[in-house]
Amino acid sequence: PRCRVVRTTGHTVCEALHRKDSKRIMNLREDTLAQMLSYSNVSAGSRVLVYEHCQEVVTGALAQRMGGYGRIVSLHEGQQTSYSDMLAKFNLSFAESYSVKWLHAGEVFGDGADKPVTPKTNEDGTPREIKEKGEGERGEDEEEEEVVDFELADRNLLKWPCPLLDHTRNYLLSFKTDAERMDHLNKRCSRFSRKLTRHTTLEARSWLYGEGGNKQRGGDNGDTVTTEEGQGGAAEAAVAGGGGETRSMPIDSIIIASRTDPTETLLKMFPFLAPSCPFVIYSEYAEPLTRCFLEVRRNRLGVNLRLTDTWMRDYQMLKGRCHPNMTMSQSG
Image (cartoon, rainbow, N blue to C red; front, side, top):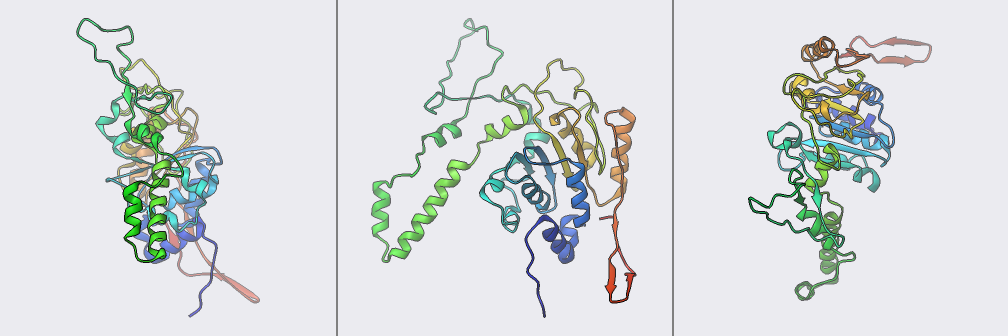
């Protein structure tokens, strides 16, 4: 058997996974992945919101394309992302890996995401005290809710390089060889480096809701935008029925490659998209995308909408002759 060593890119990783088990990545082909990145207008410095069920192939391709500049907010289900090891196969640099921020899907799709959040800490990183007021002691700024980010305060108290404590020194003496001590210290350094670079929950919320935390939910009454695999412009402003306040929309692009209903998914994610910015939805079936496309066009919530179906055919190239193969991949 012969093997060929190739550079790890979004194209090669997607091609390898598609040949091994295409159902695990929703039959996503490498040419379709390229179209998604192109239609979403992702470049260095972009702020992208991603929700995918393709084993983080789209997230890794976005990180490579942006080169560590910008921010990728990837939604995950469960306590942590299930396919974080897939990003290790992309051989991303530290800047590229650090640009990927994980956020629980409940912050976008759950009912508990309606709470405005503004982390408050002192200059030295300690949490700011909250003064309790009685019934007759309401201030003028009673409407502003002050939330303390205790995770950020604990992280700011850490110092690098982290000094060894007495119990750690005594524990190192219990090892018999220097190799065991070095292995323990390396694990300790990795653990503290993760603590210093890990974002808190309130920081992640500020990426979606802005610094002020004022938020306006849309989509519950159908007053939002939807589209299919293509490029759509947002409406002038995402207006929810019944709300008068607006908030910052810090997302430049939305990419959805999920097994869930694309219409309902986009209705929840669209209020975070800035006006006149593109969004792309991929699905392995045409029917849900057709309903999503008609919903956007009927409500006149997007422009330049496209509903496309891709196929790819390989050609056999030999000396003096060439011809296409008899079979080809469709709906990738």
